[in-house]
Length: 170
View: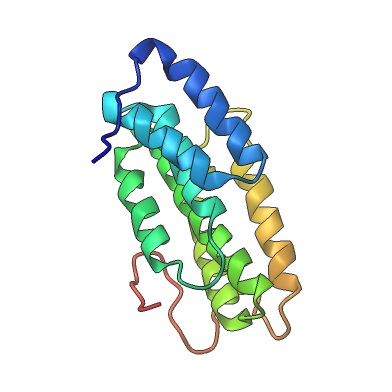
C-alpha cells in the first residue's frame, strides 16, 4: 500500500503559494490536499488552516455540502484570531447561501445569507483598523438578498429563527 510522504517544513511557503494557485485555477481539492500536507507537519499553521477552509468552501455546490461544511466548521476553532474566526465563519455561511442560490433553493439561500450577515456584523465589530473586508462581504450578501423574491429585509424568513446561536437542522 502506498503511504503519504511528509512535506519538509522549509517547503511550506512554496506549498502555500501553490495551494493558492490551485484555488485560483478552480482546483480547490488540489489546494485542500496541499493544506493537509502542510498541516500534517505543522498542525497550527494559520495560513494553511485558512487556505484549507477556503478550499473546502470553494467546493460548496448546494447539494451534499453537509460533510464539507462540517470539515470547515472543525477548522474554525483552530484559527487563533477572533476577527478571522468571525469573518471566515460568516464567509462559510455566505458560500453555502450562494451555492443554494445557484440551484434556486431560495429559501435556504435566504436563511444562510441572514446567518452570514449576523456573522459579518460580529466581524465588523472586531475588525482591525482599515480592514473593511467584512463590510464588503456584508454588502455583497445584502445585494444577493435583494435578488431573492419576497426576501424580508429584517432577517425573518419563512417562519424560521435566524438568530446567532440558534441551531437549525439543515
